[in-house]
Length: 488
Ligand code: NAP
Image (cartoon, rainbow, N blue to C red; front, side, top):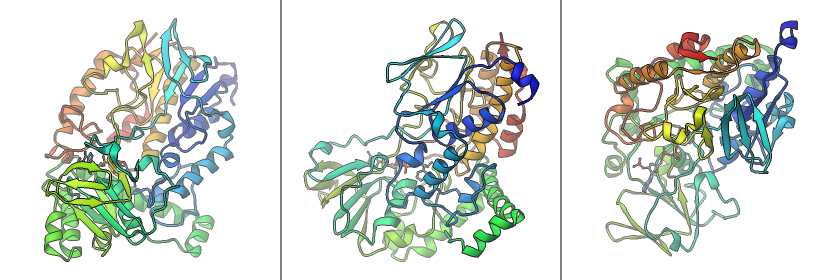
């Protein structure tokens, strides 16, 4: 710690959430000489989404070497797209190594954050009160499961659960399993389960575009090379980052040549890898590839053509004790019913009650749709910063890289407080509003706005994401433009 840092004011900082972004924040705060901080975590383990999602086949569809903290490379990733448990272990290991695990208050949720008399007053689920200068919400995006409201759901006689609440006590071998939904989650489950169960029904409301992508195992030689030759590991990371940057550049312009190439690749996969013409037509989406989140899978089409598998495209009319009844009158008998029906993507820190200056309620501010300047700061919520907050870069690129750049940016705002230049800092209403107008206009030109339904869209149908290039995002994150902020 430098002298300047040791004599500067130590703000008290609360981090909410011990997932990827919370662990990262704690590491970076300590590194920058902050000593008065704590992490509240609602469950008993670190790892966020990787702790919560344990469904068969769970994996990250961003290649592992691109989904790794930059300061903690992992030469031991087993394959291109690492399985979920391996990713979870990585986060647990990093949290232990950097002493973060000991700084977490586990099983302590934050139901309330109120800004009063210049500080944040927090209540915890254990009845404790905490008063902080700064709150950093590292609460994740996709963690409020949506269970489809289908008539008769509670009458089903077998086991029924959401993918993020997988019940591992329920045996699957020899059982008839049905999965509702065809998002990234359902596609991974399909590949993992078709040959392990007696029968597998995939209930598809909307077909998906799928790009075939290899998922190779790294050899022991590869791993040894990654360990001993940093330039080889760097090469691997650069290759992956380049691929995802190219994808992110393409999707923001629905008419770009690169976007057309991506669409062709998805179309080729469908045409070349689905043999039965009738099944091929059922799997053919009626919207442009990339409009919904693109699915990358080495083998989904192969899995859905397995003799055990059926793709059910008739609409679901109701759930009955024995299974799922579809509009053609057929009862699809099942032992296990899985809801792969996604998440509420607009909750962010909610249901926590967050009241800013003069009691302004975050729920009211976000009544139309969640907004935040650069996805980080909200007017009238001083010293309250979000990681992977509203309208940030989403869509098949590494949230770790995004969070790292956001933490570095927030750290520069915190420095204003620590250096005594202000006590409170939040984006101005004008800067936030003009950012949101510009963002919304650009988002309408992206592939996400070309006529499909997805969790990328807010309730007005506008893509809730960063609509510009990754280069622009990372440039913005280099240094805050302080004239966009109110310092007091
Ligand atoms: P999702 O993409 O939101 O998909 C939900 C699926 O459920 C959709 O197919 C939807 O159909 C269907 N559905 C919802 N309600 C229904 C109803 N009442 N009847 C019939 N079908 C219904 O959710 P997800 O698959 O869990 O994925 C969410 C996000 O998590 C992904 O986009 C991705 O960002 C992330 N994820 C990432 C990975 C990874 O490898 N990195 C893996 C899994 C998930 P419609 O399309 O017709 O609405």
